[in-house]
Amino acid sequence: MTQTSVAREDLPSVETLKEQVDELRKLVHTLLNVICEEPDGVHSGAAPVPAGASKIGLCM
Image 1 (cartoon, one colour):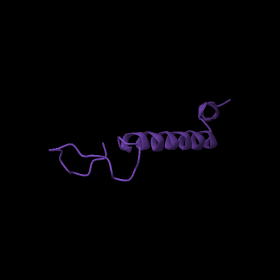
Image 2 (cartoon, rainbow, N blue to C red):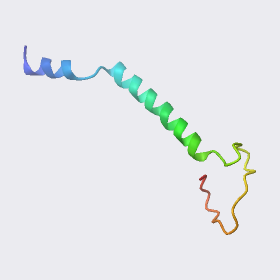
Image 3 (spheres, rainbow, N blue to C red):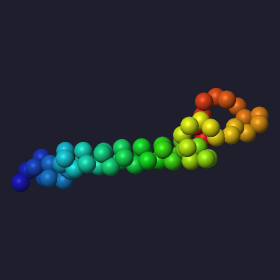
Image 4 (cartoon, rainbow, N blue to C red):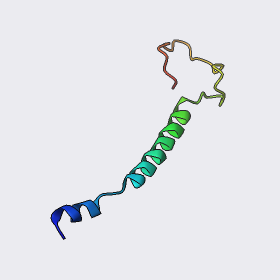
């Protein structure tokens, strides 16, 4: 066995990497939904804004 063939065996397959990317993409999407969810649980823009809060377009 050459050093190159041993190194290739240690590398994850492209399919495995694609699966991991898809899983991470789903996780990021879920986390962004949780972060951006309004306090009333509705994405309508009807959540109350605290007095004196800056209006810079943040969703948190």
